[in-house]
Image (cartoon, rainbow, N blue to C red):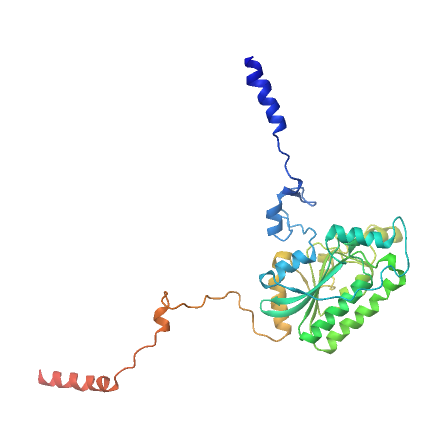
Length: 328
């Protein structure tokens, strides 16, 4: 009886009362294999705290960290004609769109917003690689045009975060037509004398690289981002040669003059604040704000005006002192 009470019953209770650990508590770094606590990763903008590997991040999460106070206003993008080619492979194109919308919670592969960074008004556009590999379709073309028009209207810079696998094959030639459309949108900014800054993230490939992603006044990339038109594997199979180490990565392109900067994601906000204010010919940003003085607080003496001095008394003081000295 003691064996049942002391061993069997507690064992049964422990089995049925055991709670499973949630799967989303830990994240494994793809580069170094370190297990990272999810809150630690999110606080570090999805950058590995062990090796500095930049993991994927959605445009909405990026904008919350980019804009002052995480506050931004979405810019409405005109919706294109759905499934213009009635394309179908293993699934119908509308079904793929619905699945991507359900998975990401976004309407399409690009998010456009406006707000302030360092008290500087900007328009930002970000591609979501998790939405059909961030592929460039008609919606993305409309989004870039809407972003450029909004920037011209507000007379502020446009900052674009690119992340795409190229053109969207389900839209065929209509997808490729977005390359000249977006180039014209960038030209609108240049004619208005407004800065166009591109931040290339991993990966940026295909027709996106061949159009708006490489037309910025300033080209910035995140560390180790793959930036290319044709991928390394395709090039190796074509030329039948081994490519150099780090070929088509951000650091390689920086060394060969295709980029201006390679900036970690955790320092990107400060970098963009400095660049936008410099290009807009604004004074350096104020890094911190002092609280306003309150009446009755430690700075109450600064709020109380000093009493006016009596000029007669001040003028008489030297004379009286001199007479006293002569009397002595």
